[in-house]
Length: 453
Image 1 (cartoon, rainbow, N blue to C red):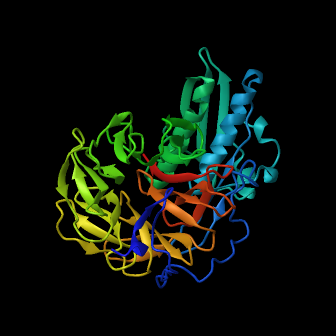
Image 2 (cartoon, rainbow, N blue to C red):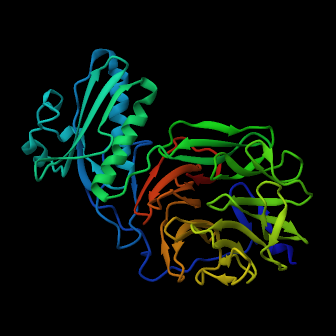
């Protein structure tokens, strides 16, 4: 095989070839340049000039408008000042990065809302500042912690809206964020009919000095960062396992092998380039070196034995991703001379090409609704797209630096990805249509290949 088209196992990005490539734009899905954001469309949140700054990108005609929501300041017991500050910051930020709400600037609020009764707001005041919804908070010192009462109101009809998670009693300081997440998830469900997923987890690889890479988990809002795997080796391509823990590739044994937490799954002399559990945990699909190139195989999760070889060609097949029903696998192959996204049945039958536009498409990830997110390159700048099972492509990012490694939220309404648009790689969250995008990490770090559960 021509070495020019060999895959390079890179830090979070599988590259093929070195020549100049271009991604064709799907008609009607992406303008030639992103139009300016209309005045008033950027939600106001705490410290909005930095991490809490939302980034709005119009890349398609179908995105919904944001609903203006006011979060009323509230009275706070003297001994709970730090907790009250956290409540307000997390509440505003959750609402903002949900992609459903525009959080109104407190500078526009009338009077002193903190002195008002949180159960009986002055609706005229909130209507006059443009709020469609109002959130109030009551904080009291309980016998075993803080007693929290959140309320959501429709300003136009002057009515309270029933929300799950509105009451939390005996909340300790380390549980405040969780209580706010629970309420915001309930707000999203009350407005959209489907609960939010604040509190869900993202796992990524993080490059350390030298050859080492650790695996790091964080909440979907970027908080609660913690190290899962740090064994002095290079660990990459993490995927959450259905029964718990993380599946990943590690060089701990000297060759890239598959591990589940601390347990080594594969025990041969082959080189593995990433793997993923099926949703029921009964199978693992992996990309592995076979006869001088990468092929897809199925592994027994208990023994690590190869139970079936799915592909067998002179080209490379990498980045496998299961469909939600476990019947289909999306992957990348350069069998046409350039990387494209393909599908194959889980029994190895009916291999077919999915992306017919663009000359460099890789890193596919199946989402819960059946869409496949992927990376396409144009002049060595990578952007993100989705494609349905009929091959229809929608563009999610444009003219915002390089963007890579998309992965879906468990409900398919958000994606997490990596972007260097601010000069260094940061973790971003965006709505499924790509319109609303938010950084969830501050300073840039060498992140790679996120997964979400």
